[in-house]
Image 1 (cartoon, rainbow, N blue to C red):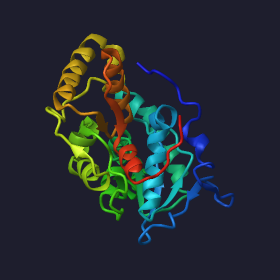
Image 2: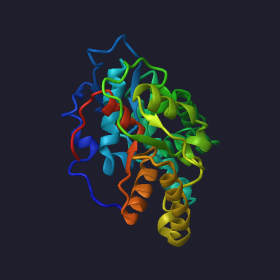
Image 3: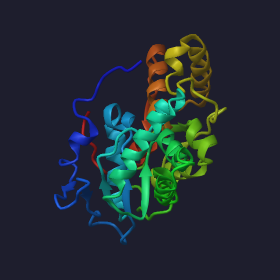
Length: 288
């Protein structure tokens, strides 16, 4: 399913991206300053780097960092571990709680106006953190303190000032709603608005845009035949739009759909909303 592995993971790129180490912080986070071209100061963002973004699609995280800085944000990262969704999905609540406690302990060393991720699946599970601790009011309150400030990347960026795109994204794009972002978090309008207003793209609506692509975590591995049938329907709808680029907002969906397009020999490319907007805004992204 995965064609290649990046030469450098996202966390290995932080220094090159302009993140400054803060040795005085016990959390060991780095800070990306606001872009000097920003029209006004924005909020301080604490960024949650998901496993898929770090290990498979680091350009997506890089694009998100650069866009938030361009919109006036300070971006802090911390050494978070997995959000806990994979073990939770298999019923291992103890492991999910252990990972969540670890992340909450690490977050105690940082502060910010918002907790942000560009992974729809991570974001959906982060919003459930407090539910993991019905008998532990301390961790429940700590989880609630952060989840009340949680925003999907597209949700926050759509509210921040960005200039008109100096080089509108070429060709035709269509957008796939990730299950955990669209149905799970009810975030549908913000990604589309970014594609049109911040990227200047020609957006064609995808039939059945909010239908699953067949990835669904590890479903494509445990039920490959059914997953392929679901994916084939998604690919047929993508072809129907005549789009040059399929855009979405979840690393898992990106990998699944890209796999299907390669299998068909399609020339359609797959990108995250952040990549498309960053390219249109003239923000240089490193090669994988």
